[in-house]
Image (cartoon, rainbow, N blue to C red; front, side, top):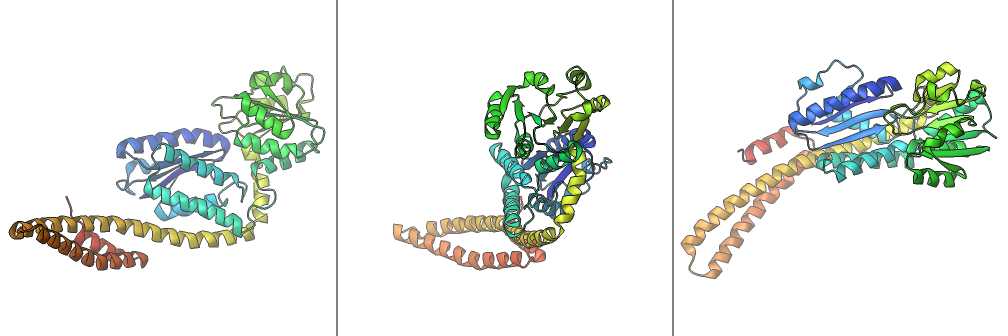
Length: 402
């Protein structure tokens, strides 16, 4: 069984996701311990926390999965597979068609591979999902134009404080999301852009790329005083900026002239900063831009769904073949055991020369190969035709039970 458990932007705001993600991790930990799960992939982005699990012992009526938390979505088999294919295609993103999710899912699979908990089934599934995401982007226009969290943040910033030219921007966090927004901002005619990161090397590298200046994260207070726009996207588990920290720094400025955009999850900027009359936005505030983007891409989404449907059919065939390959391996092994036993009996009776031993061994091997060939071809054809009854029968008749 393939299971996906998740919380995402479709049913939860940023605060709810922060809270529910802890429940989600606890749920996965309990499942992992109870069923000794070895095959799973974890996906974590600013808009979602997800686990994909493959396990043959978890059932639909598993008590741990019958929870009361309405913000945790649990899906099985085909439904969970379709969700993953839609996700890599950009159809499940807040900004429909954005490319970052494809890279994030590639990274999640690489981590699972490195840590040895990807497994054959999830490897097949995620390899197909990544392929589908690439196909959709090649064959449709789903990702053309302004389709990223970065571009959405810039659009929203211009709505609130107007033209960004001659503005001073402070970027806190040089990771993927911080880089994305910083690059979108840097396309404007800015007065200056400063980049702070816990690892100074990364801040320096991004600042050089943007034509800006890197600073130590401990020095952000000095630059906050002159910043018109603050973008925060760190991976810190705690708040970077709070009312108490910000108030003495901006005391000589008009707070309405300052825009703070927090795209971190968990959040970097405490909501109490709003009490200073500073413009503070987070992921939830990008939903309006996201809806406008979704409406513009409806036709491309239809084309993408068609590709997903076709590729899903091919993936189903792959899983059917994987299922019967196990049956065939077991059948071949059983036949080989019989062949060896019978050969040994015959060899004892006819062991008058080395030549007769070889003749008998070759004869029995040839018999097994010829019998097994027809059986394997027929079972594989049954898998292609989705004949579950015949596959189940083959497993019952040919696979030896312990």
